[in-house]
Image 1 (cartoon, rainbow, N blue to C red):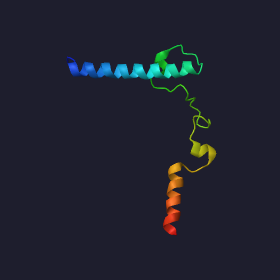
Image 2: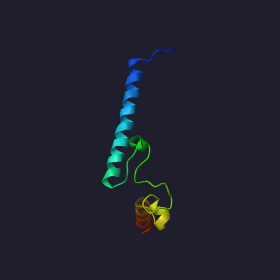
Image 3: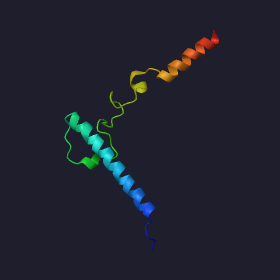
Image 4: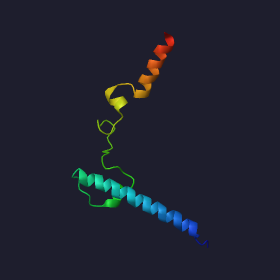
Length: 85
């Protein structure tokens, strides 16, 4: 049987603390917007304001929703036009 080293215990403790902090931050955001927070640990790996619907205007990809180019694509196209002139 392998014994845990001090480094292993420290890594685990840091990971647990990081997850707890992330959940605390997300629950704080939820409380700010008036959303109910029953279980704080539920938000360890889930963002509060993400509904999970890809077509949602707030959560979805604006490039797919509005059919517009991204800022990088616009910049690339603009530099291409300058190079052609």
